Image (cartoon, rainbow, N blue to C red; front, side, top):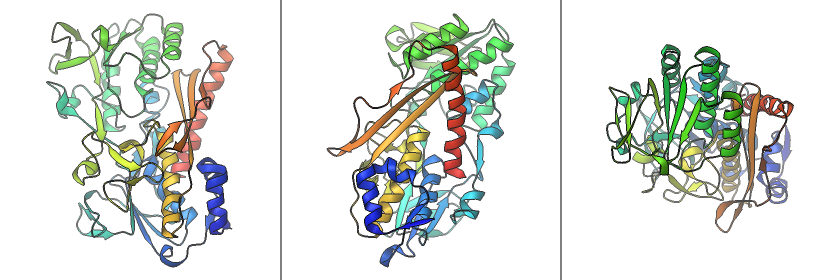
Length: 432
């Protein structure tokens, strides 16, 4: 590992931005003063939290880093659509924490945080006791607004699974799809903005269509959407048509797709004040979302349900010394995605290290890449670059781009290979 002095470290942030800095994964600075021996606690072992833990130990090896996560293994939401499509298994998208501990020196505590006291800088654990911290990173993911849809609830999700937190819900939806009769109707209710993984519902439609085409070719897919447009819309719709004909139908909000109530027992959904109804054999209802529960109970979220942060450093604007990253944060133009969380985890590791050294944070840049599979050999992608400017993270015009609308089969196959390669590389970067 190369060791950088403080000037070199800050120079990387300034001259090359966060993207360049993060590319120097083997670089570190030598802590001194209050940085040496500082205790950083991280709540949440998903893409954001685990990345932050790993890179804090890289940037400042002599700090103590503790990651608190109730689950011993983490199942990624990104990649879970492939399980529903029958091209991956749950084992393929499930990752452990052994490498973070053994290779990088991160302390792992498998417990839940029930309270955060930013005044005394302590977190309370469900298993008893508390941990003191010098800086706290909270990466709690999402929670659901179950009460906003008449007739729906957390209990109802055991009949109409959301499968938007991967794991048991993914397996439940998979079982329902396998049991559905050939010729049945699968209905997906896509959530309103903002939500985790904007292209995710539409990739899911393609993956389930692939499963149906292979095993239940007379089945239909209906997407009910409160929105009138969605990420990579043209690419998705062209791909659906090319590969699955008329199997997939998308109903936008202005044409009756905005679901207002449900009858869980009969799997019926109602829109347009009850005048339009849709009945499915399997219903995948993805509710509107907000920051994870600990963000709500600890006062890190505002009235929007999400967590306002200083978008330069991701320090909470509501509680000093607490940083919020990943899906829960209000991050300007950055989407709520695994790639964004990974990028923010690296940034917050740099921001905390510099803060402990009483050094200013330079303006970083971010990149987000989102690959989606329409079929196992048909991939599409979107990439964007973001820059901190005028107090917020903004898209850089003219940077990034999407897959071309007119592309050869070989091009789509190559993008599908890139999709699987991206998954392997980012999960290795997070947990490896």
